[in-house]
Length: 92
Image (cartoon, rainbow, N blue to C red):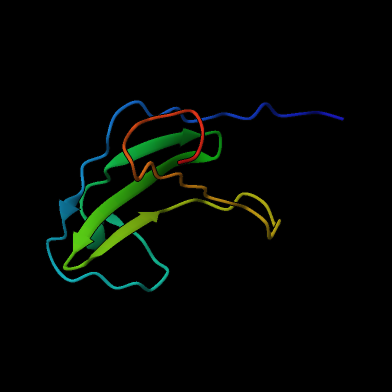
């Protein structure tokens, strides 16, 4: 059995929340034509994952384009938010 090591993204900087250039559509598709330049790029073995963070009126959109390299239904993109901004090691 071969195990592939997991790669973790350790974010030490803040991703800026920029206003959207035009109204966004929450339609399950994400690309630079709609969201503009990516706010961050996550490097993965299957390819780079662009991540966008935009504000449109009273809404905040977080979008990412992830290539699906397997037929497994349980792939996840997990986001953790520090709503207090204190950076403690445990959830607040």
